[in-house]
Length: 109
Image 1 (cartoon, rainbow, N blue to C red):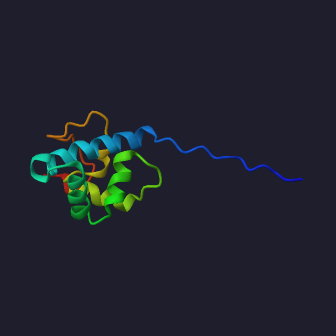
Image 2: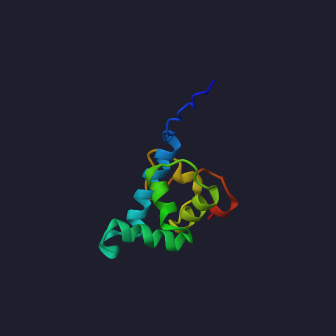
Image 3: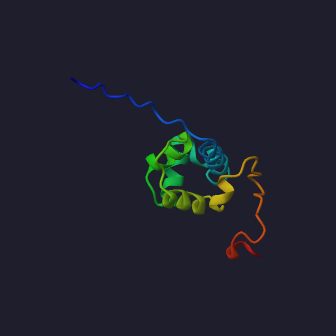
């Protein structure tokens, strides 16, 4: 008797991936403005180069896809001059990102 394989449905992006995608997009508009880079693809390429990761990695982050590597997210955060936890915050003020008091020693100024 043959057993039928259960078809897996694609994973849906969770709420944190949506926050990450939105915040990376918004910060990218500040760090790599369209006025300097010309189009979205060039913005993505510029961010990928600054973050030392591939263009497809940045695209996956922006699409909220699953299977992202924390190391890549950290590199993207560094390229955007922001902490990883800030990229996961809802309602982030992108021109003046909120800082959690004493979250990290490096943030103390």
